[in-house]
Image 1 (cartoon, rainbow, N blue to C red):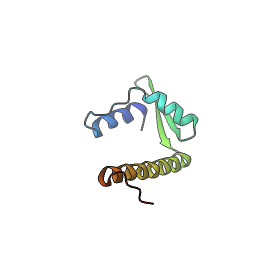
Image 2: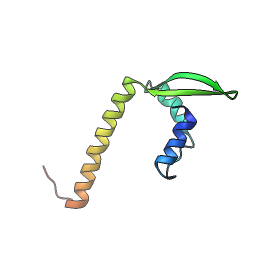
Image 3: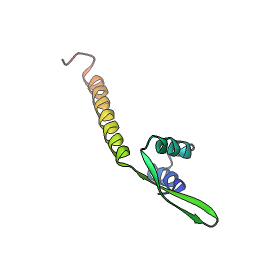
Image 4: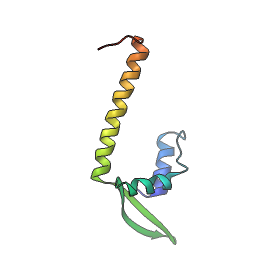
Length: 88
């Protein structure tokens, strides 16, 4: 997907709840970290479109981060549902 397409899909899939006003800053940072790369660039109506794709390092980071988020979410959920007693 190219940058504007990513932004449009975020807005559509979240029913307008999420828009990414700093999308290109985020994409550049992810590219610097090696998590995404530009697969190709083309010119459409005189404007350049860079198409991004996730790298193997980016996929590994995403998998790891989602697992950490799920673990943290489960801990908070157990605290809310079960109170503050320790389960050690």
